[in-house]
Image (tube, rainbow, N blue to C red; front, side, top):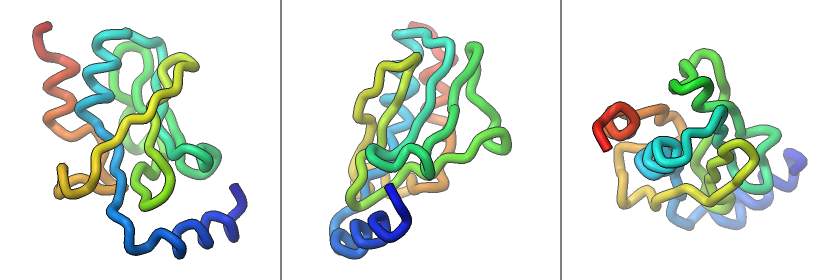
Amino acid sequence: MDTLSAFAMGSANRNNQMKVFDWDKAAQLIKEHQPVCASAGLAGDWEYTGGDTFRNGAPVPQDHTCTYLASTWATPQLDMDGEVIDCFVMESEKPDWNANTYWPDSAVEILVGET
């Protein structure tokens, strides 16, 4: 999506509640599916928002990737080895999470916890 279109979509949806990436759901799915690589991004805008978040059995360090995972109009998604699924919660459900949230403690605990 080009910058002007993204700006227009953001403006048209500015009063909508923010969708934020659901790190806990992603951790559970990664734990269940054991992908080689997982990425996260926004539907329709992966080129500018997506990046690797999990590789070779561990979270990718935040300073080794670039993601933007919240939007009023685009749906946050998880890509596990090519299988893309919607993966979000509304901001009101996780008020401490936003576009800058990256592998919160609750998600890491799911990854490393016992089954």
